[in-house]
Image (cartoon, rainbow, N blue to C red; front, side, top):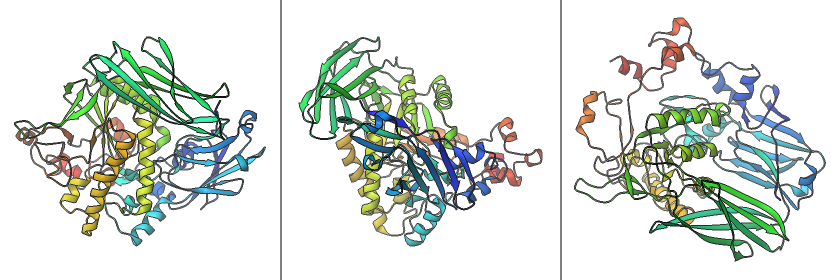
Length: 552
């Protein structure tokens, strides 16, 4: 059986600039550790953000001495797996350089069996993101949202951590997801793809499984499907060597519905691989039986844009989801569950994961499955132009593969979207220094990404940008086609009654900023700061002139 040893305790985190170090846990981050140790002030308090930002001008090192479990040492193959590194890192195992990480949205994995001893030292050197984007921008100036720091599009890191028109500049660093040693004996499961076909009240599930073997061994695969009542049926999967498949017919299926349209029953699919008569690895996921697409058919007004679930058009009600906290260690399943329960209880049925943050944890999608919240999933590109070099293309293609494979089985997944607001802004030549940058945009969002999705998830609807009318810079904010972003009431200062002039097919962004409650303001101000035009209140307002807009 595959052995997993999580490297959670026993880490030390050191500032390479000051030499200050603390014992810490992983997952974790620099800000999170320094806050826990009382070594920095809360970056949300008054103007403490500036001191926190300055911390990221230096490098940091994570280090751990580890003794592998006895069972792990007996495995034929041992891999070191990082679920999330934020962001630029060199990795060393017993002094041997394993590789360089440069994308927080990817999984990084390295073979270490030949390097493993009874005691081992793992070191991860994190480089300053501020230094990187400054030098990268000087060399290749690619621009984006003006509230963010120059150079942010040149690093595959949560863009809004460099500032946005709603948030601070707090580009934290760390090992923000699990680090593990994974031992493989004979074989392991490296990919499972579940597809559904609905016809005549019957659902056919087809599962395709790819197995990776440590040597030339004969493998077999079993599939177990468990219904919402806990009744299971096990099937022998068909295939040769390391590719297996099985089609399973489910009669009288219990269908998954969005919030307000029905229930959310979930089935469980489990794949087990064996070699030489012994279980080697297993893979288990919850799935919902449903059809899900977006209806863009022509009609008397233009073209529809409506989620269609089990043949029923859904009137979308929801909001955009941005990172819940600039300090990722504060985001937990319990906190996210409370937030999404509020959404469900307010009759939301859609959550749009906005493209300037990061791909949420698995539990986010699990909770959306359970609550009937359709997920509009942006890829992590937003309000910028990007250099489509061979290196950038390879890096982002790996990022897309990792996340599509991780998310595609979820019942809640409603669509993939190429980016946030790039087609709209580039159509007006915003941030465009040369025509090539618009060509790079089209290649990335209208060829590379959809081609990857045709390979990895051909059953989920793809939309090139938000807002868009379907791509190719064809009036991307059209009222009568596709989705729209309407911010004229806020940015343009027109009256609220202006909303009545429009009949948007799908309004994926709109709104008006409010001040937080007094209780919240008290958490980041002194009494003398509590005037909307005080230094501290203006410091916390990242949208130009916005406090005046609210007053007006």
